[in-house]
Length: 261
Ligand code: PXP
Image (spheres, rainbow, N blue to C red):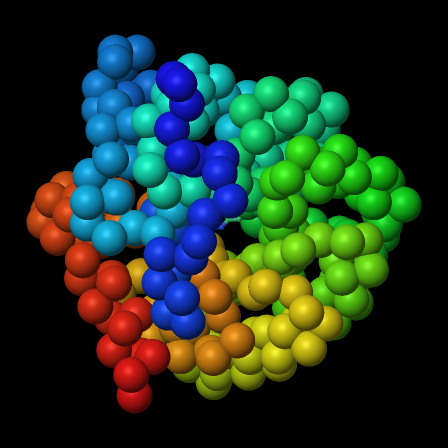
């Protein structure tokens, strides 16, 4: 059929190994800056697969500022690795997910005016609605992930509502390191480690992402409970200098190094 493998239930490409999901949103950002057809996010996704990405992540924002509906369609048709669809918990996104049935859906908070996803989802404060919201997604066979902070209340609430996965927000950790606050970054890293441990003990699959770079990825990759990292903005930027495949290969190398130590 027309459909690729982006929605199928995949045997893990690297069992036991830390998976890398490459987020291609910002290829679309560059494309949309000129209203042309290039650079094409699908071409980037296919190159990322070649470079060893275990999944492709795309965030369909309510305002469509980067990824558009047609991109999701193209990715679903052509990918041979799973598509991790990110979106806000709105009825519009639910309908889109049910139409495409991607491998996984990561629910993220979304504010129109933000530059990027600023905080985690408040699962604990929205449990009843989110339980109902994810029910049809689960029935459709999508792995449902919650993008949350390491707050134990959010992790426990995610387990309670029936999510399969939590993605821990590494944005604050990344920012603290970038701003030279090493001691605070250490504390944040410890909280992420504790969060990963708690989530795994509740039988959640644990992912992490946001703001990860060559310089800050290794301590995160070394957290043994993590199954997957999702990395976008830095890799797309680095691709300007090295090309996309070498940029991804270098991230993969650093992730593996952290795991082998
Ligand atoms: N994970 C989630 C849930 C995200 O929303 C994003 C950004 O879209 C990322 C990971 C990737 O973050 P970055 O682009 O900073 O690598």
